[in-house]
Image (cartoon, rainbow, N blue to C red; front, side, top):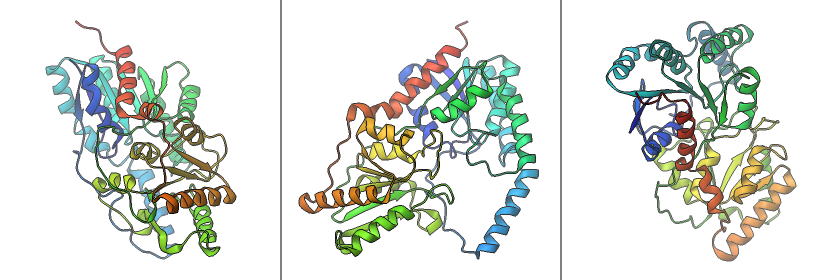
Length: 374
């Protein structure tokens, strides 16, 4: 079995890299992980949020970003990754490594991967779960952006292949690195996680994940539900609305996320408010794996989320108040008549997003770039 070195922070890389690590042996690869942290059960989104006045929260966030701009460059894990260089060199010298794969964030994984690539001449595949200086959620100012851009281009110029998670990201990478092969390999779900979970008796609607202010808006959904309750179309006592979002101080252990999704009558997905160039959250694939109807709210017609839902028949895409209300009414009516909302997902299409298939695609990229047998 061919050995490859995987460099990432495994806690940041969940669930993508753990999923790929799990299934790589099926395709003839023995992955060796180098990570500053180890896998562990974590809070889905950490502890409860500290309650601060708006002005204090703004000042704190601004101060933190200024500090990071000067002192956490390129990220806060720089020195932790640098401390792993000796371990990585030892592995390469004593194992027959065929390729190096680094995955970000943090981007410091790519810095040490490049050093190893130049030192040992091994093929190097870069996995960008989110983009670096072209990140759609880039938090810093112009001065820091210039530094990030320069370091990114210097670093990735030595990569043998670039992998990212959606066509929007891939388009940006192809424009900047038009001399390099760029591959789109989406995130996915683990098909072998078996959590037999009966559906809730109440009309449950579940959202798991952070709601990004200015990027996502739950207001459209809340207004639709409120109007349906006020009109008597939906009985308020039947509703079990569960929003697991740290901004609201509601978190659950990661191991509880899948059961909460799979027992839900409906799963709520919030699209980006404006055109997102193909960007969508990892939770979309978790939802596909949960096998429950998805209600995707907001966004713009024709985006990647709508395309995936149409192809898999796993849910309904609703961009207007009228559409959201009509969908909720339809789901609720079926729930009242039968006791549950029927799931109509197409297994053959949904399986294309399982980590078994995602890993197969990743293995193909590695096989194209790996060192030949000596």
